Amino acid sequence: MQTVFDLQNLYKSYFSRAPFNIPGSVGDTENIRISQNSNRNKIHNSKKDIPFNKEGAYGKDIWFPVEFRINGNIGGSLTIDACTVAVNLSKTIVKTAVSERKGTVKEMFNIDDYKFTIRGFLIDKSRKVPEDDIEKLKAIFETDLPVTLHGGYPEMFLDKSCRVAITSLEFLETQGKTHWIRPFNLTCESDFIADVKDLEVPKKNANTNQ
Image 1 (cartoon, one colour):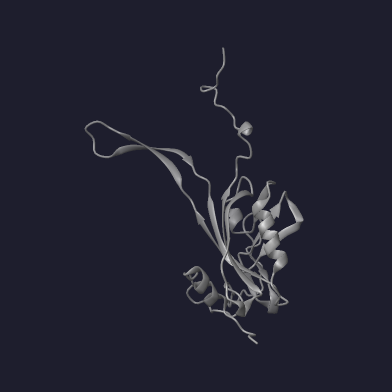
Image 2 (cartoon, one colour; image 1 turned 30 degrees about the vertical axis):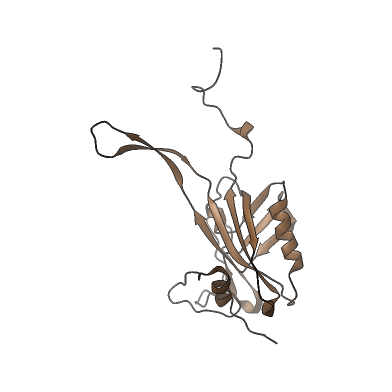
């Protein structure tokens, strides 16, 4: 029976990449982001007073966990400890060519939705297939109700609203030797504008008879 496993090796095996290691940190056999410094077991909060980390099993620090909620319901939320979060920011630039000049005049048109890529594992502590968490994550993907993403790190970018739209969810094929660990890959985007009707039409563009 296998009793020790290395999530960092599993991460590299399933996602064909390894998370960045912070110089001076020490790897761990039970979590990707274990802190081994002198501030161990100390909770670090963001400027919004949202914790970046929490204390996990065996007194280990778990950094940057995330939580999904449906319609703000904490009772049916799903917290994911063993994951990495990548954030992609982009904006639309309008370029205007100028006659007999090198280059273009650039004007920022808008900032695009923030795109989050969350890769990680659903882990059952009793070493059974994590059916409940799989069903929760599936329900979060399929629901037509508002979904929110919480956590000290993602909420640094979700300053206006924690609402997100999940665009894809993949449960990767796995081997049976660690059946209680199910890898997944999820992408979502910020959803700051809840309804087109909420948009304010600039007066200069408004269609009025005045």
